[in-house]
Length: 402
Image (cartoon, rainbow, N blue to C red):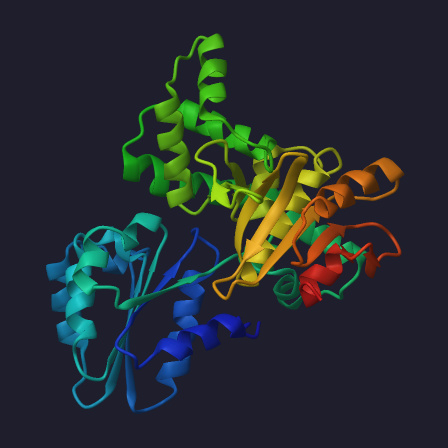
């Protein structure tokens, strides 16, 4: 099988090479960070002026690298004087005090350092202090719809879109295939790996049954406001007392593993963030589907919100949940340039009551930023209704908000 290049990420990485920056690839396990490193390895190894050192902490041959001293010794042994050395380290957070090494080597002439990690905290604390902001974080997400089509050699049609909505975008599925049972088994294996390595072991969690119940609760309530206090009250009623503080801690651990994303609420008129009752979306909606179980028929709106949320992130937006007195806007999307867009997501607009709800909330916003409704309504590609743009989901996934 020919290697498939995720060209947008390669181009993003290339932009920051040679600029004395540590490039940090982050994201959930099995979304393709290791594959990106191998692609960089192959691309740079083709040039005789380069030398590439690849350290994969998920392979047993590198088990002996446990501390920054071990890392220093290995790199020093393998560096080649007179060539441009690329130091690539996969799952670097498994090396104690790795930040001491990466800070040291990025100061060497003719050296680039690219590291990957599956925990958001790796960029906080000591690393941020030691390298003084001299890093560029690149978030590697699961496959987009267009990448999904390329990886699985599919045409852009209703059947392929349905497969993407059901199966999600884990790159490993290109080897496993898209048989429903195989897909679900693979997704649950990855879910349990992330839960064990990046949540339970890293945070020394003892109440694993509650953690698993919490993930199932989030999967079942994707796109709904989640209150730590309400979860704590429910657990108490079930004879399993858990404080709201513990709930918040566990939610933070799940976010740090990149399994789920916390999306806070934003007061559109008051222009301020609320401090509680956030929404949560999964990094890969396929894993969300596997955890929730069953078919997608009964919870299609939840899945579509998750799909649209991830696509908006790919487009470079910071995404919040919009709050109005009259109701809620699914997504308030902003960029550092001041650009803003409002997005509502629904499965079908087949009745006037649905149209009034989805379009009415957007019409209640009295500014001039663009407003969109995303749906899977048949025969809709791109329509404009009272200044609000109605896009089919496929149009968003292939052409963005155009």
